[in-house]
Image 1 (cartoon, rainbow, N blue to C red):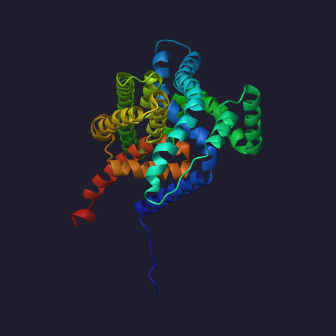
Image 2 (cartoon, rainbow, N blue to C red; image 1 turned 120 degrees about the vertical axis):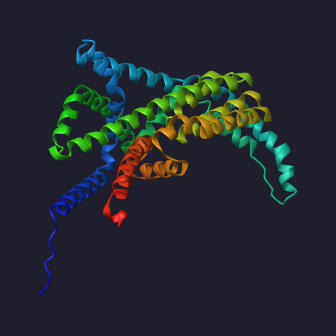
Length: 357
C-alpha cells in the first residue's frame, strides 16, 4: 500500500503563503510595463506623507495639506530640472564655436601622432561645420519642426512619457489623501495571530527606510556643496548649476553622477578649450566619487541599510531590468526591506531545530 502523504497545518499555511507570494510576483512581472507611475507615486507618497501628517496635526485641512506638499515638491523638482537651462543656453553657442576648432586641432596634433602607428585619421572640417550649422544653429521654427517629426516617429514613446507625467501626480495625490486609511486597511488584512510579528517587521522596515532617506538627502546636500565650491575654485563659470545638479542627481545611482560628469566635461572643454578643463573635472569628480564611495555613502547610507557595494550594483541592475527607470529609483529602498527580511529569516533559521540539530 502506498503511504499517503499528509501535511501539518503549519505546512499547509506555509504552502498557501508561498503560493500567494508566487502569484503576486507573477502579477507584478506581467503588469510591470503599466506599473511605473503607480510605483513612482507610491514611493513619493511614502517619502512625503510625514509632511502631510505634520500639517494635518496642526489642524490644516488634509486636502489643503496634500495640495501644499505636492505643489512644493513639484516646484522643487522643477527647480532642479531648470538648473540645466543655464548650462544649455551657455554651452550651445560655445559648441557652435568650439567644435570646428577642436576638430581642426585634432587634425593638426592628433592625426600625425596616430599616423606613426599606422592609423590614418582625417576629420572632415567642412562637413563638421555644416553639421554644426544645421543642428546647433537652427531657429525656433526648425526646432519645432524637428520636435514634431520626432514625435510622429516615436509617438507611442512620447504618449507614454506624457501619460506618466500626468498620471504620477494624480496617483500621488490620492495616495497622500488616503494614506491613513490605506495603512489601516492593509493592517486589517493581516491575520490576527500574525499582526504582532508583521507589525514588528514593518516597523523595522520603516525605520530602515527613514534612515536611508535621511542619509541619502544628507549625501546629496554635501555633494552639491562640494562640487559647486570645487568647480568654482577651478574657475568654472557654470560651477553653481553644474555642481548643484550633480549633487542632487546623485539620488539616481550612477546615472546621476554620469550626467553631472558629462555636463562638467562639456563646460570645461568649451570654456577653457584646453586640457585644463579636462584635468580640473577629472580631479574634482574623481575626488568627489572617492569621498562619496569610501566615506559618505558607507557612513550615512550603507551602514544604515546594511548593504555592501556588490549588493548595491546587483540591486540596481536587477530592478532596472525588471521595472526600467522606475526600478533604478526604488532599487535601494526595496533592497533595504529585503535586507530586513533576510535578517529575520537568518535569525529564525539559527534558532530552528534544523540548524541546532
